[in-house]
Amino acid sequence: MNGHHVAYIRVSSVDQNTDRQLADAGIEFDMTFTDRVSGKDRNRPELRACLKHIRKGDYLHVHSIDRLARNMVDLLEIVEEVTERGVTIQFHKEKLVFTGEENPFQRLQLQMMGAFAEFERAMINERQREGIAAARKKGKQIGAKPKLTPEQVEEIRSRVTAGEQKKALAHEFGVSRQTLYTALA
Image (cartoon, rainbow, N blue to C red; front, side, top):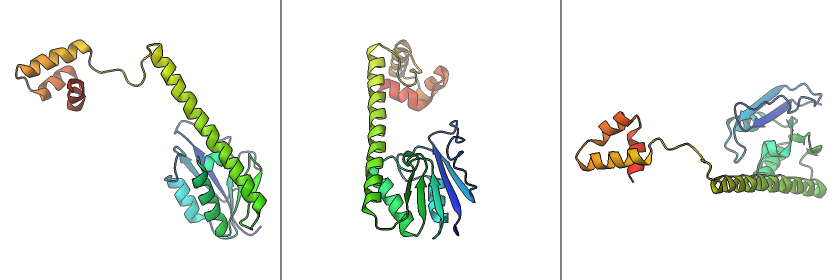
């Protein structure tokens, strides 16, 4: 094998562990690019650097399809861009390899796996929405708690009406002016 072995790793947040991705690939990577951001789109600094770095004859290794792209359009565009440049891309979890050779079965496999990844992401989002709705129905607080109580808002409102400055009131109540303006709206 003449080309370099390049790894692309992505986790969704800074505190997630990247160790499980490609750890058992049995390959010594010449270069590894690691993003710690959502995969919702292609605007990821390390992905851009990785795509800029790879050259004809290289091998791009990705743990799984959903680590590279969260939707079918991005997946197909990235794989096509990479393989057209003469780079082989391998998804280890799915055991799929794409070389850019015109192979209808390879393309079908990629589209099917990408569709499954996109569907799985949609299901996760749906379950999250259902969980939030159920929590709200039970009266649970969703998001940050209000910084001002309804009583404080009423007091501030009457004091503003009496002529006091909003900036001074925001300072007194320990909130930003924007928080105060939002509460009064």
